[in-house]
Picture 1 (cartoon, helix red, strand yellow):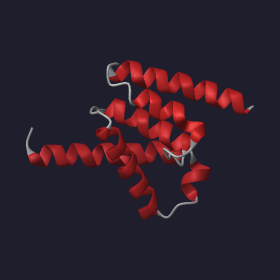
Picture 2 (cartoon, rainbow, N blue to C red):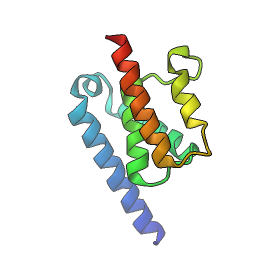
Picture 3 (tube, rainbow, N blue to C red):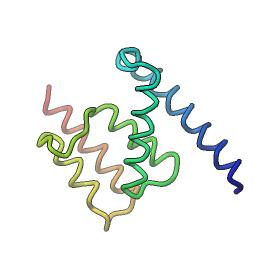
Length: 112
């Protein structure tokens, strides 16, 4: 793929991610300035890349989880499970993502 194609694909992904977040979380996204929303999406994408997630589906699953958990900070003991699972590099990305989503469901259920 050429640099131009990569750039187009990245812009397409970014716009789709933004559209998804705005439609799924209108209350949260409406509170942010557009530049702040863009920065958050980029930060979450970088976070996903830095943890070994490379394809669009993997990255979007991480972005979605981070949006639901925001703010995601290592110092937050309530989210220790998130970083523990992310650190399991011996697991495939698919297994880590499934484990993260399952742990998120338990996390939310425990808050009810």
